Amino acid sequence: MPDTSRRSFFITTAGMASAFGLPRGWARNPSRNPFSLGVASGSPRADRVILWTRLAPDPLAGGGLDQTDIQLRCRVCTDPEMRYAIIDERVTAPAADAHSVHYAAKGLKPHHEYFYQFYLGEDASAVGRTRTAPVDDTPISLALASCQHLEYGYFAAYRDMAKTNPDVIVHVGDYIYEYDPGPLGQVERVVFDQTIAAERVRQHASAEVRTLWDYRNRYAQYRMDHDLQNAHAAAPWIVSFDDHEVDNDWAGYMPEDPHRQTELEFRLRRWAAFKAYYEHMPLERPPTFDRYRLYSSLPLYDRFDFGPQLQLLQLDTRQHRTDQPCTDEMPAAPDCPGRYDNANTMTGRNQERFIRRALRRSSARWNLLAQQTWFSQLRYPGERYNMDQWDGYPQQRVRLLEELGRAQLENPVILSGDWHSGSAMNVLRNFDEPSSAVVAAELAGTSITTPCPWAPAVTAALPDNPHVVYYGGNQRGYLHCRINAERLHAEYKVIDRPGAADCVARIDHSVQVENGQRGIVRA
Ligand code: FE
Ligand code: CA
Figure 1 (cartoon, helix red, strand yellow):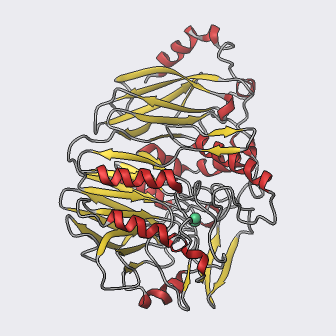
Figure 2: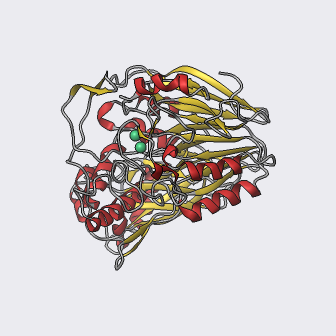
Figure 3: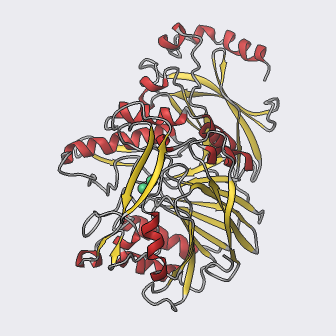
């Protein structure tokens, strides 16, 4: 919209500036951009979408605003020039939510493109593009992202993603890493006697994050990246976290290293992490906290419909899981009896019931399950497994395999992240029996930037795991899927030089899942 009309809007409401709590810090520094973290949209439905921004003129120091709620303006238009508004509303950025906005834009048309922008005083945010879900059988394009350790590269994968304009971007976790900063330059890691080199090209701005203040600043540092901002501004996201949004390999109320943080400390840390995650994501529902028992909860798992053709379940395999069994050796630990405990769960009972119900009620042609860690078995030499993945929870996997294998369920496809390498796997009814029925396809996207020092270990294990039909190894990138009535076509897009800001993505490999075929037919 033209500057003058925006100015006049704020002139007429100027008398309300104090009532709106115009931030003192912001008013003193009019050169500072309150929209330093960009915009985002997410949780797309056929008639609505969540629009997000966070006011942060001083993003690495808590945002730079005082403890008053701020009102700003949000417009939703049908054109990128922001001339034809269908929504023009005042929205609140609560101080308690770090001045983030989660505005549900409602009454939208299915599978329509919309443009949105926020305004505060003389400042306007970037213009975001979003798209509602269809109610018919329109083909859908989807990008799958995970694992974006900021120190190990630039977000060239996101630049490519923004360019391809997908209908939806699905993020399955490790949006931030909680760690201390490390020294810049070449880093080497030895796993299974093989050395993998990576390069640290940027640094975390603070020590390992533990408090709400820390997490907020960490998200802000990641979100200041322009390629990441552009990917958020290009399409609606459906997000769920994994471990590094809280603490490496945490499970339920169990931290990575219980000998280094007390249960009380971890309960407060988990709540801070949930809160900051919500504050930076276009989520529909906020977290809740029971301050007496220190229970925290963030509703993440959900079902999304993209017309009668496609159902997408976004799962949360961290918040409700039981502790990993056996030992936590990387990349895989020896098998042990604890692995077969029936009480072990990745999802918790309620979420398992939700999955079963959603799969049984589904009449969709494609049933996507987006979740975090690899679902398929991967047996490493010497009968070893990664206990943080579904291999640590084989009894629950058997129950889900039964659901996925039901004849009435059409085309189940599992999308995963976490392991920093792309792969395509036939999900077998019984992984120990290579000739057993293929019940689903699993497509794992690689990391946006995080290295994969265990890639040689996975490669060494491949002969023993014939259901893995493609393994990309230590490469950065993301997965791009196009889904229509006949097939799901997936491209493994890779970034050859994550340390080069201008690196262009290329397609390393593609696979297809044909309607009615279960499993990967072309690799
Ligand atoms: Fe990761
Ligand atoms: Ca992870």
